[in-house]
Amino acid sequence: DFVVTAIFTFMWLVSSAAWAKGLSDVKRSTDPDEVINLIPACDHDENHCKEIHEPVVSGLNTSV
Image 1 (cartoon, rainbow, N blue to C red):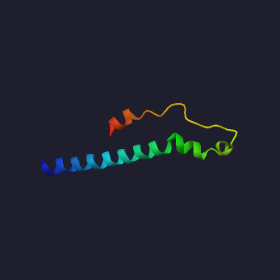
Image 2 (image 1 turned 180 degrees about the vertical axis):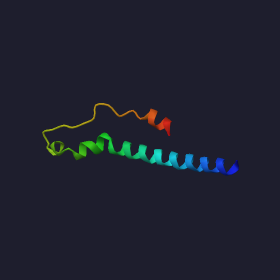
Image 3 (image 1 turned 180 degrees about the horizontal axis):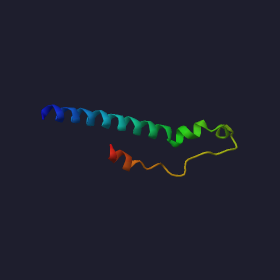
Image 4 (image 1 turned 45 degrees about the vertical axis):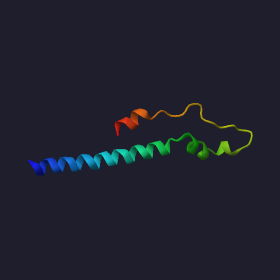
């Protein structure tokens, strides 16, 4: 019984860490400042690129 519990606990810990890493990658990849830097048209002075709303990730943070 103890071994089965230890295995499930280990698997839960590993999967939680993987979920947190995936969430971190998603938040970094969809950060508006990073996305704006990747758009070539935003490099021109006549274009004013900015975010309208800050992304809301509180639900994702809660899931981790």
